[in-house]
Figure: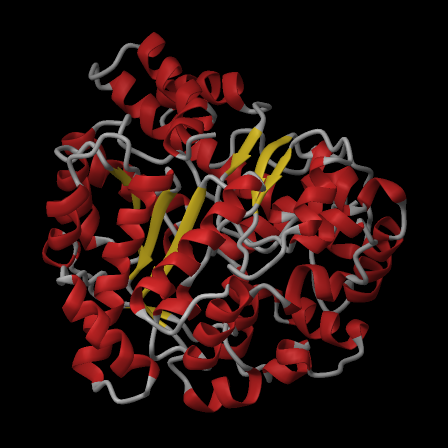
Length: 474
């Protein structure tokens, strides 16, 4: 029976092409298949992501298909919005909705996802995770909603059961520096098969343009009993990093629009800090402060060993009207041109040759991979190439990424795949996509006589586990 006519298949339904994403040419496809099969079921190492720790700690059932697969996934909601759907009708920004009605909107607009990474992941989640062979449409929306809901109401589809079923070895969350991390402690003591680690994310305490910056810095200083001085501010940040390390953290994440760094004397920094917290700093001074604090974060990573990840080049909240109505992270953040070479030079002049310092660079400006990031990673022992991120974590973009970085930096200077997602069910789909894409790229090199098949297999084995564990000090 045609799945579009409403059949809900069992989890074993063979509707997905087992050779999806592999090259079309037969011999190359055969090599790709063999490479992929050696890593297809390898444990998932996810050292940077945004799954709420509460989901794993509390293990409460997911409420409904809409909340799980649509409302909180800005990859999905932004394309629906571009097609004329009001974000409020999808529940974005906390707007009250009838989940079934929102799901009907999503199903009726399913055509807009054709050929996109979002559509591919959603199909993977429906079939491979939820065991449902049903194409969304106006006619099948209710049956699909009910079928998914029935599964979400059962123990095998609660967060911890899925965590173990996905084969997750390590999952990192992203956490506020003032979080007490008690939920991480509870998970660590719970016997979960796999580690859930916090990640130190201090942006709101480092960026004078962040909403509530002055009050947040005050809370930070008060929490650690430090005076409102630059040395006190740095000591408070060090104390919170140490707190995270005690709870298993191995990395600190920084999201910036501009990867600009500035080296200053202690006196210059102290004076600028006072101007910033008093609200007297102009735009140029605030940019300089952000740049100096990135350099200070690198200094602390050299001292305490936390891996420094830098996600740069995104203009946040591009639509003021959307931000005012729905808040941040609602689909209107966009890539911009990025300059890592000049921006990071002051930081790398100080710390770039330190072999214990790990700096992982993520970009959404594709042009910087071959022009800047790969060449930098092929010289500086501290610099690693972050996996394709955000708009680029899609099959064709992954292939472009490999072509852009490999000829100058090889495979060893990469981070391994990073899913960077809040969409929990997409984690296995995204890692499987990356494994297929890498197998396909390596198969082409084998077919062209540039690698032996044995060497390609060893490289792929490394990419999916040992490499991210090395880079993220796991």
